[in-house]
Length: 320
Image 1 (cartoon, one colour):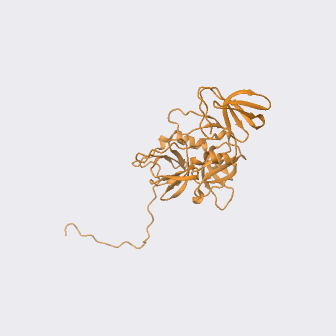
Image 2: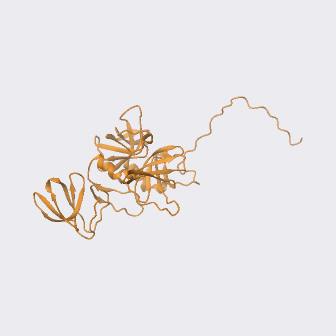
Image 3: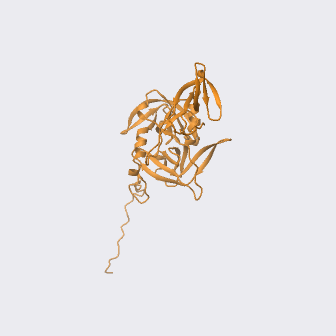
């Protein structure tokens, strides 16, 4: 993780191993670059440099370890974030964004989800929390001992859209215990998704937390029951539902939704453009306990189990 002195024009040196260094370039030749970090001066061999990007004056990039060049500055009520990211490896992306992938639990079962901003807003599948209001979110936070689960039991349903199988939730503060700023993911662009590109998912299949699975994009517009999905060879099992499907930049290009357990390689994710439209228009799907159209589907009563002819009961006359 690196910092930049604000108000100073600085370059970003992206190294071939995926790390970046920011500072003022004092000298550059065919062999090395001399870089002023503000508190020290270092020499970086040219053979280790992947790219040099000149930063705009006064810009503070997002503090995420790895090659994040520019983060957007969302206006108004936009809840998700986007950024210009450099392609790297699955190992480094999983390290960078692993804390943003959560477990979503309810009395009816459990699935996955991912945080879209530091305030605790997160996305999951509608079917993960369908007909449930008692929801718990487990965040896996880094510590010196590894990733430690932290459970949040006060989770508010913000919006539900059963027709595209998406839900927007928010982790709320419990009493005076305000949750810390959360790590979050960046949303991708479907126009940049290509058939055959490498992708990976992070989720909690069968309760096995923080599981990473790898695959490729089989097709970006598979029609299934009137909806378009990204078809992928990335393994998606029960418990993965609602988790992110990443590209190698670490951008979320889809929400893992379903797969065939006994047919390998047939798995599906909701495209990221469907997700961002849902988030942008969340107020149209806002959840309210008192609203019968809040997104819940109510089950019809079960059929009669006793098929005997009803008893012939003669009611007394009012004149008797």
